[in-house]
Amino acid sequence: MRAVLAVAALCVTLGACAEQFQKGYILPPGALEQIPIGASQDQVLIVMGTPSTVATLSGEVFYYISQRAERAVAFMPQKVTDQRVIAIYFDKNRKVIRLANYGLQDGKIFDFISRTTPTSGQEMSYLTPLFKLISFR
Image 1 (cartoon, rainbow, N blue to C red):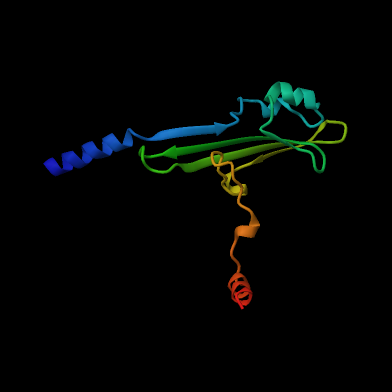
Image 2 (image 1 turned 30 degrees about the vertical axis):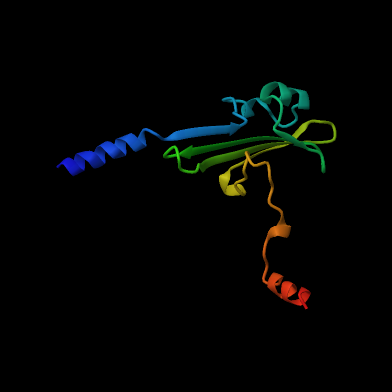
């Protein structure tokens, strides 16, 4: 009986230690409904605020990035529970042509803190050992 009570007390204690983390942009309720297709870039800035990042390669795109994580116990690593990227695409006249809401299932989890981006050059392929073998001779 004492063992059961001790385990229950331990579970309650550890369960109370759970932490939730919100990183990046916090979407105001109803904000996306205020941005119809054809809205101006200024209207988007008024409603949504400054984007997390802007892309200008093929037309201008505003990206609003957020990530939600939780940690069960203070010394354990964080686990990403949700990741959102809201993309607002503009035409050459700076009018909204498309809205996209990407979630965790649409992409890879990336690290906000380390500020490093993995590149494809660091990946090992099946040819890498062969090239290393040839280069030593």
